[in-house]
Image 1 (cartoon, rainbow, N blue to C red):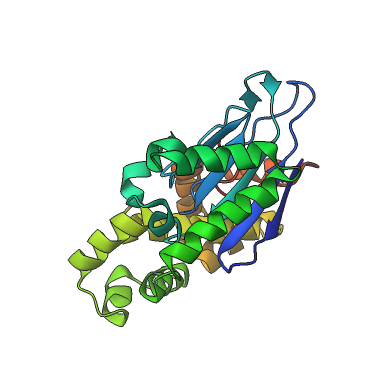
Image 2 (cartoon, rainbow, N blue to C red; image 1 turned 90 degrees about the vertical axis):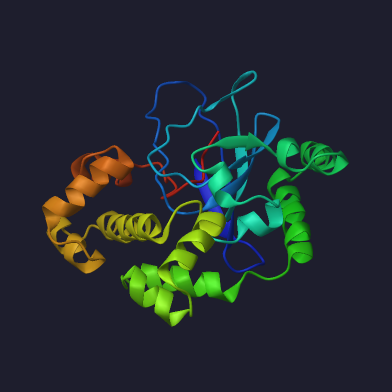
Length: 249
C-alpha cells in the first residue's frame, strides 16, 4: 500500500510503501515526472535521479520484500541540497554515501535506521540539508511553472530573462535534462492525471496540450512504456500508486 503526505516545506512530499506479503501482485512502473527522491529501502539510503523513461522497481530488500519510505522533491529542488547536478543522476539510483562523503551520509543512515518513524527521520534529514542549501531558486520555479502551463521553451526563456542556450544549461543542472524534455514529461503527467480522473482519452489529450489522442498514446508508450488502456487499468486498480518517481529501489 502506497501513501503520501505533504511535507512542512512546499514542493516536498513524504511517502511510504508497505511491502506486499507475497510476490503475486503487479509491479507498477515508476513514470518520469521530473522529480528526485531520497529513499530508505531495505536498509539502504539512496537517491533516485530524474528519469527519462519508465522504471520498474525491484521491490525486494535484503531479506525479501521490504517496506520503503521516501522524500520526493519537486523538479529543481534536490540538486542544491544533494550537492550534485541533476544530470549526473539522470536515470540512476545512487547510494547517499557516494554523494555525501565522510560521516554525514553514514550518520543520516544510522539515524533513519534507529528511528521509530523512518519517514519522519528521513524528512528531518532532508529539511536540515535544505536549511543549509537555502530556499529554492525562484527562477527555476518559474521555469517549471511556465513549462507545466504548456508554454514554449522560447517564451519561458524570455520570461525568466535567459537565452535558450543558457536555459538549457541551467535545466540540465537543475532538472537533469533540457527544457524540451522536461516539458514532455510534465505534459504527460498532466494528461495522465486526467486519465486517472476518468477523463476520456481524447479529451485528456487536448486539455494537456497534445495534438490528439494518437499523439498522447505515442508519448505514453515512449515515456511510460504502457498503452493508454494499460495505464488506465493500473490507475483504476484497488491499490493506490504514486504517479511519478516515488517507489524507486
